[in-house]
Every structure is written in C-alpha cells, then in structure tokens.
Length: 318
Image (tube, rainbow, N blue to C red):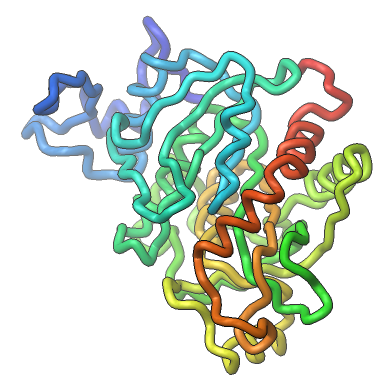
C-alpha cells in the first residue's frame, strides 16, 4: 500500500519520475500536484494516481479496506456511511466529474459496522469523451489507497425475457465489446504485469459473499454474464439478439474497464447489476434514461442492506 500521510514519501517508482509541487487554482483552492521540473502535469498514469492519492490523504486520512463504485441512480448508499467525508471529484486532480444524470461525482469515505470504506458516488463513462485512463482513474486511485476488495455496481438492461426490471444480478463474467482496454499502450510495471490473467476476474469467494449477504437480508440475486458496450445509444433489437447468442444476460455501458484496471493492480473484484429495464426487442416501449434512474432508485433500500451485509459480514468490525 502507498502511504502518503505526514512524513511519508512516494514509492521509489514514482519518486524517480516525479517531484512535489503545489498550485492554486483560480478560486483559491489548494491542489497538491505532482509535476516534472518543467511544471507540466504528470505524464504517467502512475504519477497521476499518486497525485490524487496525495490530495485525498490531506482531506481524508482514512485507510479504506473496501471500495464500492455506485452506478446510475445507486449513489444514495454513500450517504449512509458512518462518519462520512465527501470530496467532490472536481476538487481532486485528474478526477473530472461525470455529467450523466444519476452520477453525483463525489468520493466518499466512512465506515460500515466498523469497516472503513471508500465509495465512488458515480463514475465516468467512455462515451462521455474521456480518455480511457481517466475513465478508470477513480478505481485505480482506490487500489492505490489500499483497498483489499471492490464491489462495482451498475444499472443494466436485462437480456432474458423472463427477468424483470428491478432484479439484481451478480456478474460472473463479462464480454468487453467496447473495442478498447485500459491496458492498451505502454505497460507501467508500477501498476501491474503486461498480460494479467482474467480467468477469475469476478472473484468466486466475493460472489458467494454477495449471495450469503442476499440470503441474510432477504434479497434475491441472479447470476449472469455482463456485456459491456460503448453506448451512449441503447442497443438495437438485432444487437440484443447477438448478445444473447454470445451468452450475455445483461448489457451496460460501464464496469468492464474498471474490472480490468483493478485486476491489473491485483485487487479482488465483485460486481452487481441492477436490471433497470428489459433490452430493446424484449421491452414493449422505448428505452429512457429516466426510467433507468427511477428503477435503480426504487431498489436503494434493498441495495443498501445488501451492500452493508457484504461489506461487514455479520456486522463485525474488521
């Protein structure tokens, strides 16, 4: 784990490439930045991650053990954390805020039954026009903060006609159909190996913990494969038929890149989809994002109970 609290120094890999400096933005807000001698912004992914970590440590000196990413309409869980500290993305270096409705854009720290947690209240999407390294910057920062496991949540369309809006699905595997990987380009050995294995990307033990938590709080869970697509348009009926032929049970526009980035850094991952609608050709009416938000919001109580039980099994502090 990278420790950047008072008196600590960056890792050797980062120190060789960067040095500390400070800058004030136009509004007078202090931002801790890592810069090269030319005063230009950090040029490597690892340096930008450390830059964000350094800024976070100044405002939230917490050692989070669990990370949670809250997708469309699911951000209310972060408001339930004990002793919460909220940092808007816009106040952190290299963390632009999403402009998609249902994504508040804050990094939230707190505790659940004594377990220290960091939540991303909303995420960036590739379809918003950000480079892929910015899309996964938040989860990479979580990893560098020292989390031991991460639960990613999302809103997704159901590809199974017998399933219903509001169902919750534990992701067992994914299809990355976006045409890009966050690992494309030069590999940074400070983050992980060039060719990470994705066989157990969705950790079997963490998935079972979700099912145990579901039984504990009375929430039924499905299992299925998630197809990650670029978007932002919803899929055509022909595309939905293709996805079903390839073994997918749900489709969405996030998550797959975050999973790849986290596994690259050696972090254990689980993921959960809130199925907010039936996909095109299965649904009987046009798809709208407002419906996605509404259905996700309607499941916030059940989701919060499930997340709390997964984060702190038995409610014991750890």
